Image (cartoon, rainbow, N blue to C red):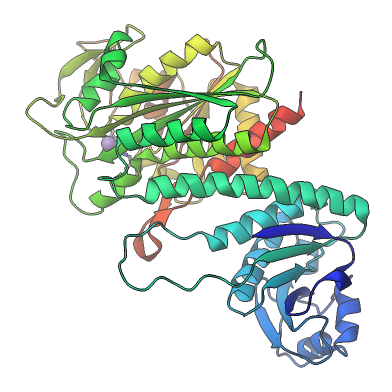
Length: 498
Ligand code: BES
Ligand code: MN
Ligand code: ZN
């Protein structure tokens, strides 16, 4: 798909679909009014006749109106004028993309000019347009054997802007949006694959392929022997019940000088979480193939950063294995020694994410990171607390927490701060080891994060619990690619600050 910011929409070819916005009160704004004038005021009349209300995301296709600038016009509702902001723009563009993809148009020209006081600049508009259209074009890498769906006809999306300056900013947004969307799609692909394909070995191979594709990324994939040498006793305890060997994946992206401390992203890569000896209930156990979504998001963000050539250093660390029951599997009451030296009593083998992450966080210390952010589908409790709308955010650093939350807001991939602290660590007391790996049902998302915090002391660290946001269940079952938008926004902002 080609994305282009343009100034004069009259340069577009015939057969295009012009997309114009109508507010609930019937106001069209510029340049919609001008276009509607060429339609003989059709949009205004449809609104006046109550055929088109202008409700947010409502669409109506005016097919082949004779006076149309292009073969088709798609009306998109923009909702209440005073309430039009970034979120509404995203919704309107989403509806526009869905609408135009149903038509035979090869090109689309977007005229959805925002309210001047919507707070949306041209860069943000461009990014949203690219993100949304790419998202609509995403197809699950399925293994269905029937006839393949027809390829889409749409091949170019033009974003109309006010002048050359606006167009330059919008183009930057479109380009960033495409890179971001590719990172999201990469992440979704990995997570959507079945767990007999997407194994730890496969994730390692995908990381190596990223390293081949981008000269700026250096990848090493460590196997069991090397993981043993690192004394990652907690990680290895989870891996031991599976016949699939574990991998520690380390990707170093170099976009800044040697002396610039990197950001470390740490991803949970459980390619299947059966619960282990503390076996899960059967309902929805298949969804535990998505338990490597943290790992997928970290690799997706890395890919986007490499495409954008951001002037920062970034390290992606992925601990990946299966969590399976077996005769030699880790069992409740086993005590393991983590890489940090702290001992952990495994009271529940289903609380495996924190066991692999604690060692990966300890490993991140060797990079002397400026910040460490781990991403994990860590707890069902987080889903209960926040639902599917927001990721849980815990941190031991106020400034970092604020930056992560702000990135989520800007990227429409929100995270909500939740507490950690001594009260929660208290719940993890063990009579037999330094820590237990579970702290009871109460505050489960917070005790899980508090467990990790014991391995992050002295680091500027944030934790994203994406158990509720990384995938959707039910009829729309599939990966969302979250929190790649948050992570990439955070890193773009960091690169700008330099
Ligand atoms: N991967 C799960 C968390 C999860 C559960 C994500 C459901 C999304 C939906 C994690 O490994 C897990 O099993 N956590 C346990 C922790 C408990 C044993 C303390 C949980 O949340 O039940
Ligand atoms: Mn589990
Ligand atoms: Zn898990």
